[in-house]
Length: 433
Image (cartoon, rainbow, N blue to C red; front, side, top):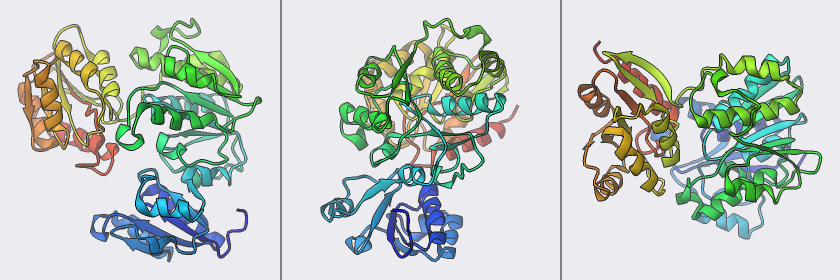
């Protein structure tokens, strides 16, 4: 669709990406409507004011079939499920349904580097951006990190770097990155996709439209990722921790997982023409990203880490391994909106590394039951994050680490993981010395 005038476009979801789509299409004279499940009082007042300023048609407090009457196109925000009744109805009517990144792609012309995987996406995407910047390449970092992809104007850019989630990939049609990266695949978002197989299939869509002139960078040590890569038409570029390409001692951010992230990002930068010397110089000073095993502060000899982006058990496992000193030196704050993943491996590691678990949110009771079934009893239920932080501080001793790594989504108590992380940091800052 190149002529948008008088085309009826219905956006499902009024979050940042949904409003960004409206912002893009209204000036092109599309007839834009937004359907939002939440009632008005639960919406971000600034976004609501902007939607009204754009004069889009608003449906708040639920999705109805009337919203899709006469629609030429539906654009889904990442949080909207494909199996809700109105979307099933739209499919019956053969109304095209796309994601925000698919729409964005139709306005972009420069090479896209797209990063997906269960863990490490934000760090890898950010690193690629830093490599390109240091290598005098003009690039923007967007997508599931920072600004929505549809907001990018790439006229004066060399590259577009995008973090892409499985939700966004479900409804692509023509989206085609020049370089795609799949970092790893472990159980996540099962409540959305239904099975590990469906989740992996959604991730594999990142290379769906790639051709022999494109690249797929993938983790050769992840069996499932390697199997998926075998289906791709793009040129395959495997990476592995066994590579001697990068010296772990020269990478500022700790952990084996970050070596993998650095390797993936480095391969992408090399393809884009950045030298190995520049890549090494960036890795020596890159401090990591906010909300991912982020050292907040140290008080009374206790270090506080914000890992709010740890939204699944495997993320929390990575954080625990990174901070463990061989003793039970960690107080773990976990819980939130349960994704339904297997907790077995995480609980085994908790038994070896964690002196106390403090549980919050909707998942608290399931986590408690699983922990107790594995004979781990050093746990406390907190009513909210404030109580969890205060309790952790009272229990911690010099040399301990207090780690917020929820292994859950944030939406039961917060608008997103960023808000959860920033409130955690604020609460920690308010603790007495």
